[in-house]
Image (cartoon, rainbow, N blue to C red):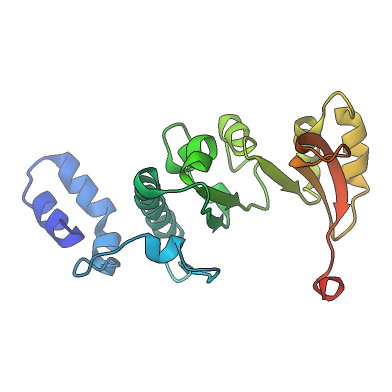
Amino acid sequence: MDFEKLRQLLGGQTSTYSKTVLSKMQQLFDLNLFDTQHAFDWSKITQRDGKVTVIQLTSLDREIQTVITEMLMWDAWYSLVKYGDKSRPFVVVLDEAQNLSISDGSPAQKILQEGRKYGWSAWFATQFMKGALSSDEISRLQQAAETLNFKPSAEEIGSVASMLSDSNTSASEWTEIIKQMQKGHCIVKGDRIRPNNTFGAAPAVLVKVSSFEERN
């Protein structure tokens, strides 16, 4: 099966539904982005000894970018369900994550809820969530084991403060902390080494990110 065969099958149907699907997918068919002549194994990507693979989709329309990204995520998901190993993390950085579906049953939702046991280490990066994602999708995104929050936009300060609040620091206290954040600072929430030298859940904390010059 490939997209050309799918186009022919849809074109041979007489229902209005098939004609609508054919029209909606026409651009994807015309681009012919997938190589169907050669086999592909995700281990070529997941086991590269530190080498980075960049899948660049900026030359495509936004809708096509999203479709291709989700198809790749589904394919990688099923591959790692079979062959993934949590001792060999598959690190994936998903930029502009607000454009992905994080609804129930989506690959992003499965990765966030179950991915770690199959070796996924997915990093979802987004500049904003409120207005781009539903409350359910934001809740799923906040299930990530580790979150880094740089200074959010004014309209998102309240929701970020509520997410960070706990028995140690209230939402109103976090609101004031966030308002005073400077460039190069972020709030880290997740597991880390605690004062008693054990590793586990710890309160959120404001940290300064070292510059590249300082790291050298």
